Length: 278
Image (cartoon, rainbow, N blue to C red; front, top):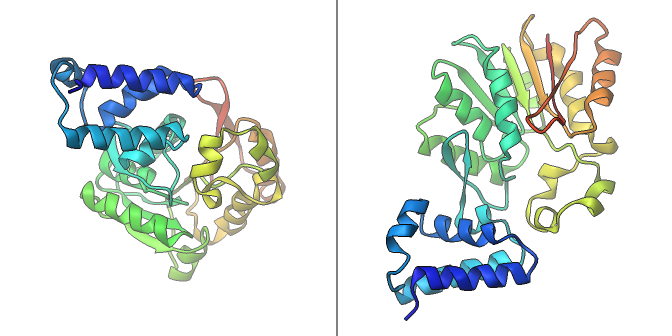
């Protein structure tokens, strides 16, 4: 028989052979068994049942092929909550928590807001959980992503209005007016794919990563339709790539020259947020 520590040591060795950091193996074991580090310390010398060995070995093989751990275990963390994820939606990034907080701090308690390109729903649901009186709408063009977002909303007992469609078009059709808009849309230029981690490009949905017109197409679609949905003085907040701030600012000012545009850096010192009041 093998115990949990021996199995982890074996996994660390294989992980390092593949050029990954050993923390990936540690993280995998904790997530597969839904343990804390304390749980591991308590159980590390216990013999592993055959079913647990098989479960971990299958997960390890997927990880060694480069698949993100979040897809293997079926969940990811965002702002202290757990959300189901699969390969139909992006894995939430820590930087997006900063975008969410910047937006949240500008909202009235009973505002009507939208999350454009909701994916797994982490932004919309977190905002609703943090301010329960918000009227939250979430849109996405992907039916599969919307199904995941609905499941997550049910899991977190969050009443969200889901509208399937392209950017703001479903809201215009419904005649909805907004007190706030947040979006983390696809914003990567496809030519940048060669510089990206294969773990991202092989496993995460390209529809949620890449956009036409050098990554700006979805932003442009949203910006074009803002006059149809936004109430005066309402915050508009976009997550951006590290090198997109000035270009997106120019796109907005070309359309709406009276707006004051802020470009805000994330905790790592990279441009991460473009924000303005409508």
